[in-house]
Length: 276
Image 1 (cartoon, helix red, strand yellow):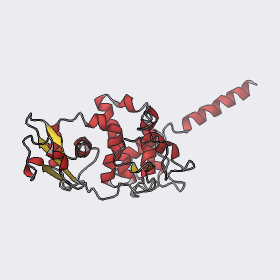
Image 2: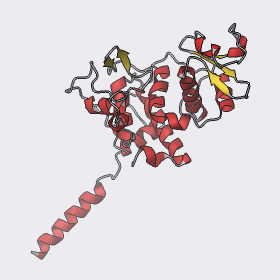
Image 3: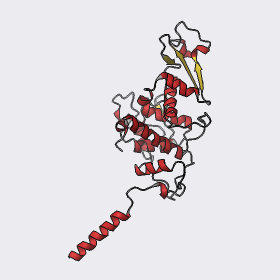
Image 4: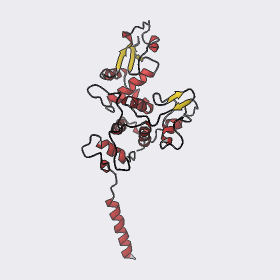
């Protein structure tokens, strides 16, 4: 009897210490030592966010789609459930026309986005779409991060926002004062009728010295989101360009999420978003 107990204890000890406590990215055949995203992939595996493909690959250079990115957000920031917290039926999304209940990412998609998710959800009268299989560009990624971290983004001082945006060559930062819309109160009325394309951010300084952005809150949304992402090195530029039209790869998405986690940890707000 005593011999059996000793053998069982020995077997348990052997299993305990021979099994790694944290599965590392070395399990992925295409994430070798020295890979630029290795640290972030290891981090996300440890947090239970990544599992890879059945053939042992991670496919770091493959473009990520909206469903995949959403699932990563959902797993890493497990306190972020915006659509579950909406008491008003006008803000709560009841269904996406293109996400059936048997969709593999149904729950994360239904929990993470509400009616305020500008640039992410698409309204067609009373029908709402999310396009779960659509590939995410680097510009699109800005809207996803803004949907979740807008409170952090809007804490950045206006002048710092403009300074960061001025250093990005593949977007247009346009001063309202340089346009042909005269107004006795610059930025108060006429600023809302400026026609700018998606990649133009128009702004003006009010008589009070404050800064206002054109097109209602749309240009402000883009301005603060981009400035926060670039200013915190969550989204990197290359030769002063964001390469906004390029697809966001799986490796880039993982790195952005890891860096966001670290920024929130550093400013003391992490516990608002996750328990991991």
